[in-house]
Image 1: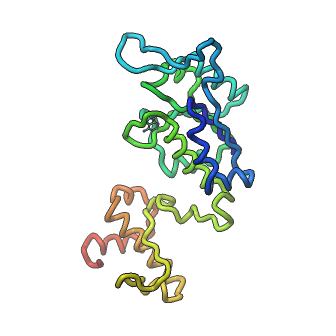
Image 2: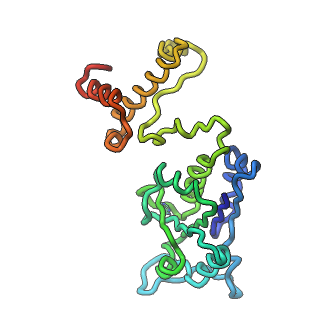
Image 3: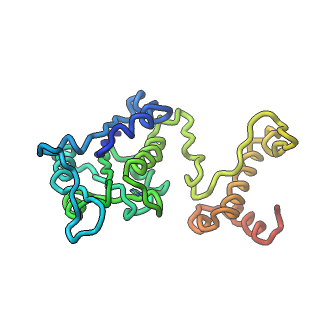
Length: 244
Ligand code: ADE
């Protein structure tokens, strides 16, 4: 997958894209990442990227000529999706990240200041994505969140085991609790089901814990989760207070 980010602060991406899984994805040739500096596409002496809003009011707006020129230069004659990171976009979810992970190439546009000139949206943006209902000072951190969520879903990035299918949200449920050694820590043990050596028992226990945790913390997710008859029976027991 190729991801190009258009930003006024390309250096913000250096550390995040050079460590851990993002670096492994690049090193293994699974991700081709570039941060392009919007300022490099200015054509005036002062390399101006923003201007005051028409109608007055505070803040500065990213100029449409510079931003559209940047997008067109990077995109070329391709039909690559151009995604603007903005608090007005549709919400990033595991489902959306999965869809994006199947695309060969993405261009991410990071807004700054008060926003971008509306004509950029009309002329050059194909999708707008938000990472949550709060406002960041710019789209860079949001772009990094999106990239991390998407790239870890590319086959081969997390290793052969493909641990993605166990993620919280992958099947509409939160993950249950995890334990590792020692078997006892500060008086707290490990559930017997996990140490029994009975694989079917472990799977059953994990499934129930996932349902229980989702029911306790994010009951809204249960409406859309893919539940079997056995799952529903367990949920009914939880709701009736018959299990703890
Ligand atoms: N830019 C500023 N706030 C944002 C948000 N919540 N999501 C995506 N991009 C943003």
